[in-house]
Length: 282
Image 1 (cartoon, rainbow, N blue to C red):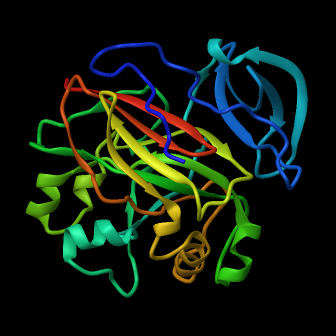
Image 2: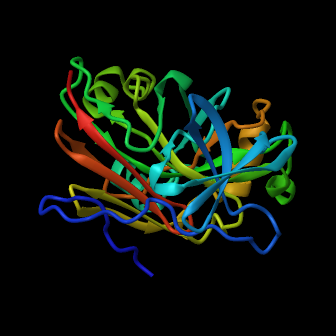
């Protein structure tokens, strides 16, 4: 089912909560894990209805319910992960691969975003002075739960904590000029992530959409991934050790396009929620 647009678009309007309601999943795990700031401290919590329940520890080790709860609308949500690395693969949707190369590769390319590029919900994406064109790329991101090396695809989900929204922001003109994506994807704020880590969704069958100023620009489903999540975990872990909190961005569908300062971009993934960010120039 297509997702409905949210956020203040070109015509304005109210915004609903960026997170769908939290509840216990089919595996008994916490469906929506968030990271937030309260009383000057960074904390983890779980979404339960309209409130955030604080948890002690981290989702990667001991994670115990604390006594404190906070109204969701009063919380400043942070990027829900603090990874040692962000692994980006692509192209991984057949339609996007055909846009770029007219064919799907036999295996996905692997590259990286620096952790300094991370930002969270509602944080601004800064349009760098070196670039003429900066594009959005909506992606499902896989968040690892425990150290992972040489893991076969059939066991991959044992090592996954959950999934979140990621915008693989790219300076398209620099990518073309450099003939490789390293610099184009590495600027500070070029990796918005959030709003939560959803632990109990089917990663290979959720709708993924992008809205720019309220207008739908990308619309697909992760069932169209050329290399599904389990395959990606196996392929990446065959090359490097994945650590708790590490992120694999699974590629973007067709329809990625340019943003301008003053725009507002929103990535929506079914079962996870909305990741919204303004675009600015300084």
